[in-house]
Image (tube, rainbow, N blue to C red; front, side, top):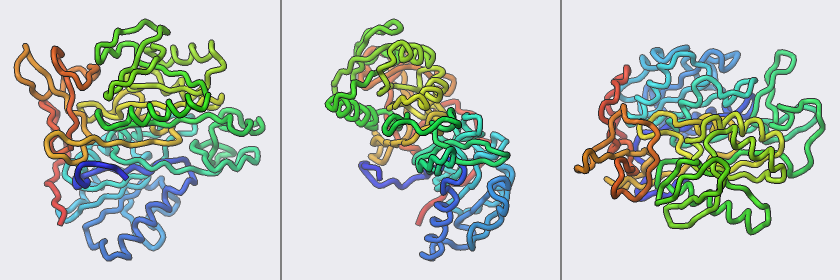
Length: 406
């Protein structure tokens, strides 16, 4: 549940993601059951679309009928003026990028979208366009499977492995070490993310977790993006100690890095440090591969980041890491215009010291900013989707009239 100034009353995207046999389908079925039992589901107000690769019998979901589709246009053709909710099952299987544009258009037209899909391929990479969907997400629910490798029965398995031409849910330990016995209790690696728009409190939650770990003598190690100079901090060279300053003024010592390779190198040279905190992960190139390879070795990661930039597109490796994560904590800020939940990052800019104007679509994606706006070219505001502005944005190929909820 999100704590906001006003109730969430705008279009949104909820993602249900996990490995094979993790209960994604059951969650959608239960949701449809409740819609039918309550009498809310009528004729065309809810569209249920399903990719044919999602199930051996994709036309049925319990006693519900689904519309089997293989591309975005087929879903678009189902949308009526009365359609307020669109459910897309097997979203990870779509191969045409138009599916991302359609999901974005549906949310912007004030509709509710519920999307389910596989988080990772058997090769450990984010599945299909799931990172793009994660970049657009307003809520994420991660489902877990039961690892059957070597009699493990770990019920928090979040990866899919291929065994004898059959896909099975696998824990991180057995994904990389299928023939080895279970790791010692409490030594399994993990990834927890704190994501959301700027000024949403994600860094505060992350910082509180860090302080709890420090009080318990876990000796966590903290990493920061080397070029973050907000609040007057000095940019640090690789592996130098710098400071992270939170919006509330708290300061945290951190090791400066710019890439995932640097993170991995530092940790391998300091083998006793396995409780790892990473701030502003969207700026750290190659972070996904580093975290993916270190989790099976017992590293526990806690990271913050923006899943989408001011242009409402996925930002760095954070959306991919959301596919890999064991837990994702979504956070909303408060819209500076209307007080509604603000999932968007509104970038503003001053040109030649003039009045602030919205940033342009072609402005650089990476421009580190903060709450203090004096003397900088770019600064940020938290806004809801209705009040978010992006000049010069390309036209979406899908046009939908705004849906008004009654």
